[in-house]
Image (cartoon, rainbow, N blue to C red; front, top):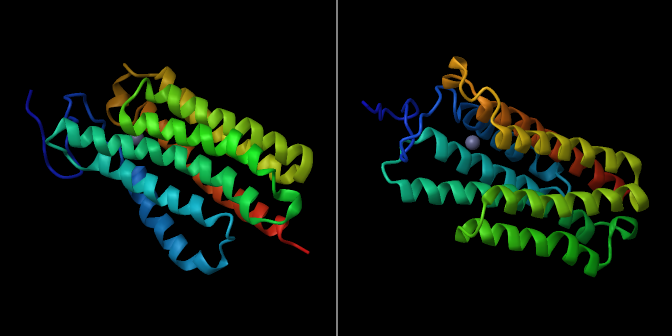
Length: 226
Ligand SMILES: [Zn+2]
């Protein structure tokens, strides 16, 4: 089959699977808008939010590179895909770890809790993805699941209900996106060659990035308020 290799418009990935017309555009546009926001808002960003925001830029950049560039080599495409997936775990780890590390007493869990429920699961999950061990969906889902459930529980029980609500909204958006990615609805429908389940997942994840950032800003402001 003829392969269109035009930059941003190629119709096949390096491994030969079809590439829908809209794939990658949402994350490409979101990357430009988000970088603009970060540059403008950097000084107003809470310390607890900054590492996660950097990880979001990283993930949006890798995701755009994976989808918009017509990679000739399967190995390079695979490497960028792994960096993208490791970025998703980095967002999760940074989002849950940093408020616990940098904010005042009430928001600070014990080091053992942060290490066991966020740092270790995320390091193991990201390591497995980067080294290509096991199933990526399980590595991402399990590490993020452990960090999300434990930290949301901690926020709800010891910190503040609104902080926990931000966490729940963000986790639901990411979680639904991952579920859509795993179940692949409408995969055979004709419109999926233009806008398919992967693009629906990108929409949910992008909404998750916004809620993630707003939630961290809220938690940062709440935690170091007098
Ligand atoms: Zn994607």
